[in-house]
Length: 402
Image (cartoon, rainbow, N blue to C red; front, top):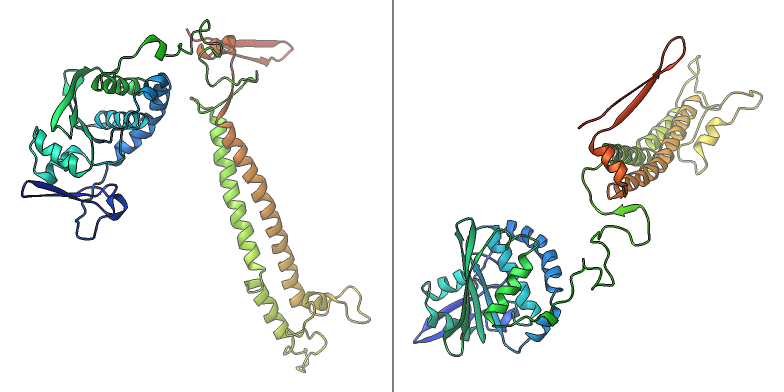
């Protein structure tokens, strides 16, 4: 069994149909069984592309959508068929019904209804009984099959109260009808035919590419900035290689600098290896011996001291300028200073390279509005070059692709 979005199970006893839904749907008791349905991942990706086209299509005839909003509770059971095109059109029809205020939000399919109710392919009375159990006034469902180079769809409107088919629409669809650009219009047209809604010229606004009827006509170039700038924002292709290289290089340097900064900071931390090395060197100074075998107390550095061990070790003994109290401890301190400087540089470089990565990433979505002349030159790969020659003079050359 598939899905977790809308779980329900039908039972049929003594001519009566019951449906079990989880509490968040109908607030029924725990005795009902749940059925799960998993939607295909690929159609969900297609639905993302479809949504943009649907928004544009529905905005073309807002009066039609508003006029068709009725107080009917409609359950849309989807479109039966195989392929992404079927799922895309199913999503488009559901979106259109939702905009009209009809779809009740359930996501049960016709196949699930048949399975749980034991209904046949065209068992309309059985479908109607299920609709009553769902507390729906109407059921809308469709089947879609491959038909030549295109498809054929049969869209049905079932009146649950009468138990009869109120309207059925059959139509042959071309590839253009189910393209991303036309999908919303196709779905709207099918629903209009299903509910016998007549679209008049007054319901349709003038096209946006007509400068005489639309005062906000923008020459169809939606990517062109409105402020007169020559920079155009948005994805484009092909992108220059130097931008991609810039993102890769700065991104790699950011990661490297961040790793260096983190490692260096940990090394000089209170529990880091350099701190432990410093304490060990100070501990050794308490037990080291002179050349004659006696205990050397002149270079003692107490590791338990609350003072600065490095300052104590670097202090010159009385009467011995230019020397240090303890050379081994001083060497560890010098090492710690170098690592601390490396950590500081690493954090600075991380911020700098991160800014560079963000800048190159932004450039991937920004390009200049090329002039027609520049576009022609790029199209024909016009190239020029020159080089000086011995004895004076200059040689020019070039290439041109037809």
